[in-house]
Structures are given as structure tokens and as C-alpha cells.
Image (cartoon, rainbow, N blue to C red; front, top):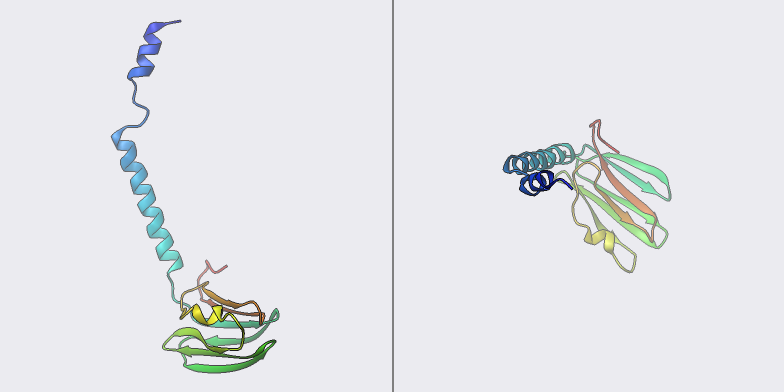
Length: 127
């Protein structure tokens, strides 16, 4: 075994200070890119009930919609550019607790009533 090679490996530094700087810059740039891509406010609200799109609504116009659903009644409200559920007749009311949404690809789901609300925009990155 060659002792010079062993000493050389022991004395080498696999990660240098500049490597940490480069890694930090890449991580910061990744977060900035994600923020810019996915922080866009939406333009349209899609209302899906039992797999069928019922409404395609403008998020910038104040609207109130009442829908008869499987477990009773649901009220959807768009106010000040934000979508929310104002009333629902289901036991857990999780969809109502979701609060207001307004950004692209945000959604509210009411599983017992099979209702899906989604905010979409004009971006190329909509999924």
C-alpha cells in the first residue's frame, strides 16, 4: 500500500467553503423561482360537481351560487377576488374551514358532496 496516496486522501477536503456558497445560491434561486411561478393570482374559478364542470366563473366579479348537492345544499361565494364556501350541509364542514383561496391551482374539495372548486389562470404552468 502506498502511504503517500493515503496521506493525500486524508489531507484533502471533499467540500470547500466555495461549495457551500454555490449550494446556497442554487437553493435560494430555486425558492425564488417556485415563488414566482406558483404565486400568481387566478382569473377563473371552475366548479365541478360529480365530475362535471357546472360553472366557469370570473374571480374578479362578486358572485354567490347555490348548488343542490348529495347531502343537501352548498353556497359558494366569490368576493373581493377570493373564493370561499359560505354554507354547506355536510357533517365535517372541512371545505368551509379551508377559508379563502385566490391563487392559481389552489382548490377546495368537499368529498361527501363530490364538489371540487379550482382556481385557474392564464399561465403556461397551470396543471
